[in-house]
Length: 208
Image 1: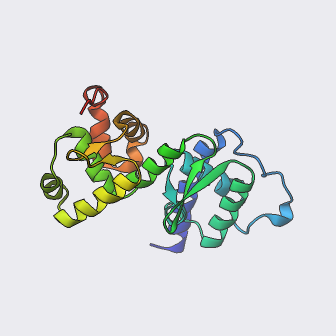
Image 2 (image 1 turned 45 degrees about the horizontal axis):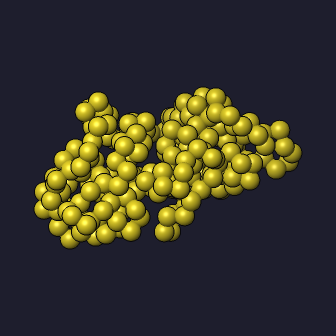
């Protein structure tokens, strides 16, 4: 693909998410600050695109924001720093990652949940357990095509994070909150979440 084609794709991506960002409260904060501090080749479209992306993909980490919006590392760092300083975006630590969220929208539990839902294996386990509450570790391993040890490792991490109980098999903690997050942001989580969202009426009454 030519550079022109790549640039057009980048502009289209930025415009798409900027439309979401422009409709987000406080998205314009800091836009009128000193033009001398403006990052090269960024401007309000990049800033609004980041706001829109974080609003539609809460819990995304830095590299995903940068790569999905086709931005450079420097301009992504610049705008995220400004947005955090302006109180538009906030972040939480997740190991080596910073995960970004619209400021003031999610509780600590929801931020933790969204962070784990952004991890493919952890999300797969939670979705599977929401659908089949009595699923065993072996059944989860077979469904997700991972080893039993991988399931055990993620189950331990989810337990430590307060998202899963291992007292009597595996049980999702606060399942209705997890279902709500999966439904609300289904498109950003992939086909399994979209399928789960389609079955929301039966799952929302989940009672292990």
